[in-house]
Image (cartoon, rainbow, N blue to C red; front, side, top):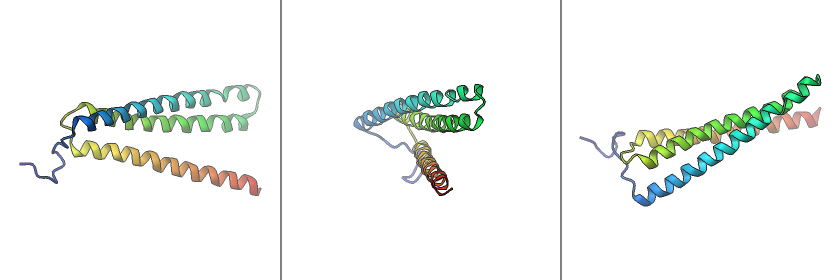
Length: 127
C-alpha cells in the first residue's frame, strides 16, 4: 500500500497544472533549440581564424559556442522531463525530483560558468 511519502505514488495533477507544465515544456524546448542553434554557430565560427593561423583567436571564438551547446543540451533534458510530466497521468514523485535536479544542475552550471568568466575577465584586466 502506498503512503503519502512513498516515491511511487502519483502526484494527481489537475488539467490546469498539466496545461501549465506543457506550456513550460514547450518554452524549455524552444529555449533549448535557440541555445543549440547559437552554440552551433559559435562553435563553427572558429574555423576561419584556424585557416589564417590564429589558434588563440580560434579558441576564444569556439569555447563560448561549446558552452552554449552544453547549456542547450541541459535545457533539452529539462524540457524532456517536463514534457513527460505533462503527458503521463501517473507521473511519480521520482520523475518530478529528476526534473528538478536537472533544473538545479542547469542553474549551478550557469553560476559556475559566470564565476569563471568573471575571474578570467578580472585576470585579463589585472594583467
